[in-house]
Image: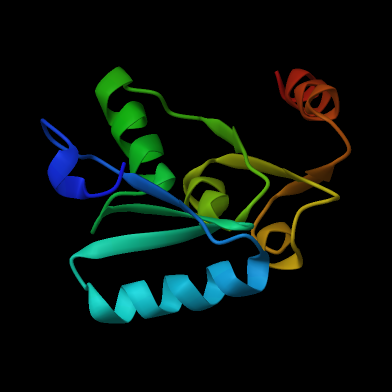
Length: 123
């Protein structure tokens, strides 16, 4: 699209391609400063823009409350997944994930099957 005015209906999120991690980080910081009513989450070389208070972590909280779930696991591989990783009771990321993401996860795995095997051992 050329303009948000071209869109009909409500806009819930916007994704931007910043082309590389360094540029994405810079743009995220600029967006957060200029638009305090929005959240800008870096996704490696991209940016997810959503209303303030919206995150994958908030989604985890809503799902847990709505379905009365006491234990939920999550897996993510980029900066925009940090809220999900923090708010999951058991969290995973990959060895290839950025160091900042790895710092928040309970487990660092090679693959989804590794994460599933860990969860199956907990049952």
